[in-house]
Amino acid sequence: MKALGWLRLPLALCFAFLYLPIAVLVVMSFNGGRSAFSMGGVSLRWYAELAGDSELLRSVVNSLLVATGATVIAVVLGTTLAVGLSRYTRSAALDAYAMAPAIMPDLVLAIGLLAFYSLVAMTLGLMSVMLAHAVFGMAFVVAVVRARMAQVDPSLEEASRDLGAGALTTFVRITLPSIAPAVVAGALLTFTLSLDEFVIAFFTNGPTTPTLPISIYSMVRFGVTPEINALATVLLLISFTVVIAAARTTRPTEVLDD
Image (cartoon, rainbow, N blue to C red):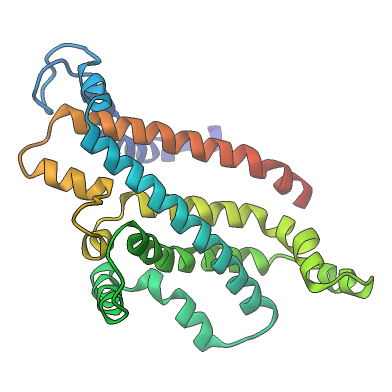
């Protein structure tokens, strides 16, 4: 910290700009009054109301199901694609196609997916949203894993194959442990993006299975309540727990790499 010198003040201002709104949201979730913007005492009232709101909890479950399924699909396909692009081809066109869903506007991707679902007569629901989120999640997994693959020495995999190991054994015992931190990072990124994604879910979901962002959008049209602050605080706590757990899980691999 001593080396920062005069940078301490702008650094503090940056952190305040980033985290002060989140701190306000957490404090206002304990508001005892009905206003979401002025404190009317300290209470756990809105957490109790959140626990009793079956419709909102159902949308939370829907979002968790979609995010979990999309993460699994994106990690499996994205990791496989990243390894293939890194080790078996040097095609700039394939690289561009793999990254396109990550940089494409959500609205364009949503309309395209909706047109495709209509063409194949697929019923809109949680499965259609899950597949849609896996599409853009896979692009982020490819980006993160490819960056990690560039740091993995190919001679380790060649040595494994020279010693008689097959392609699958080499991938499981050599490649996968080396890129595990990137796979976990890609999974966390996909899960988080899927959890709060709104535009694509709005276009590709059915009317009876709302995800959490769609439910919140419906609620805020009639005014923001402290119940939404309580819900955001719970999601924030879950996100921090997942990030800390992932950091502790990947630490041994990073130490070995060093």
